[in-house]
Image (cartoon, rainbow, N blue to C red; front, side, top):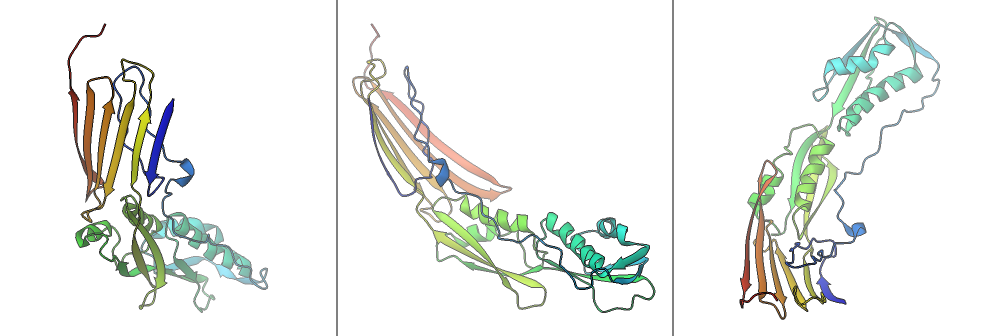
Length: 292
């Protein structure tokens, strides 16, 4: 017979697992899989080739392609995806496909905010000029509202810097670093920057309730392990606004001398994705004796 009572401010928080001495070890309650937090993702649209009028009309005989504005992708890589358009006549439809191929190259490497254009030009000499606009991070605006200390926010946002080319993986990783902290949630919005070709990041930090407090009473049906086992798991997160997490576990068994206590504290140090973790455990015997 097993009876349990759980009160929770977030059903998807984890409960520390304490091995129970005796014949049977009961697993700690697990969070429902459908309520687990999913990694943050930036909403994006995959590039699509544009339909152009008079797609079969020949534009010019292209013998050379010149690229301008690229920094995140090498010229050699750009030439590798456009080589098939050289030394032959290309149509309007193929010109649109060429620009799409360049944009897709950027997209597949995580540079999702890129424009590829062909400015007005004279193609009589067979040279095609392609201008690439790579979105650069402008300002990073943060709405914190005293949820995390400033040094924590500055450390977690350090990997994304103004003036660098926007990369999807870096921005998503930054947001997920915030979301890895309990009682903290973060969202990111993209807005046009004040300067041409820039994108502002608007990061909003939200206070949430993700702690789970658990009280359970179990009847193991064994005198050796105790007729009744009571366990309490208490959790407190981000109390000092530093992203820390503390847990207290206490176990008591009737008709046996076993008592156990455990205190653990997790505090991220934000250095190369490492963290510190400390714990204290104690187990006492209130009486001594020999088993029959």
